[in-house]
Image (cartoon, rainbow, N blue to C red):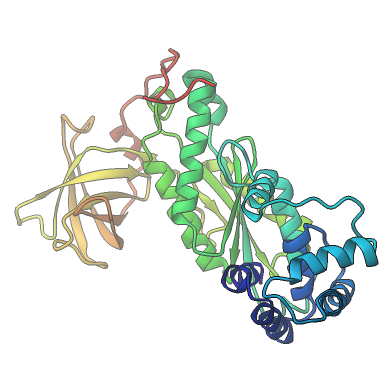
Length: 393
């Protein structure tokens, strides 16, 4: 509704007749909340719906009295201002501010200065408003997702706080890139972020959250090699309206509880739609070889991450299909030891940045000593210098 009314002002702001007709038509479809939002956008004041409807209609009548010889195309705003100030006494000291400047002020009041995302206060108020009208949300569902960067204090301590701020900006950028139109992202506080995903069930919310988790895992954060696991990752928890709760505070609490569960393992999203426990994955980019049959010529690929139950790797898109059983070779000197494994392809994702596809492989048997394949992780403590062109204040 907010966007629809803003579009009416953009299109018919200089033509009162068309603007008022557009507002009335929208109100017939969506009720008196349209008048409430219209006056909020025009005056930055919020009235209850019935009061807003009455003020709107009386302001139109006041315009006719102010301009008895014929309505000017843009007489609504001065008439509304005079009505609220002189007649209704709702405004004591009105000021004239250009709409663009007012919008900049409004945006600054509801967004986080570092990341440009909405801040926690606005996010929670919007969620409260959304859950306070259950009749309007009948048969509808949405998701709240809470995220927290893993071991961010360690990253800050070893790389420096300015580099930490830069990492928060990169995280916010990835959030925006992975959001659907109309969804809302906020910086909830510190290294925590939150999403409001409209028309999303647990499967849709999990898919989007997992896509974002993968994007963060693959982001080249400056200095992340100084961390114990050499990779800055993120964990997430999901709550679904109305399945988990119809209360804003309880939805946030439920998402936070799922986030706490995810943080026990880190770099996962909780809950998983299929209810299965997720394995810890470690980022591991190294050369692998694969073939559909061990008698065939093995082709090269590039691993992305590995766990006790499988790994993901990149290859050309023509070579593998979902459900294929393939043989894998992990060989020295690219891996600490030589290993041959068999697994089933569970998913294939196209990668926009390269000609490769990302293949998710589940091992037919999970070797107990799979972690022997992983090299020891250095733990340097030197400070990291700022990325190029990053301002120091």
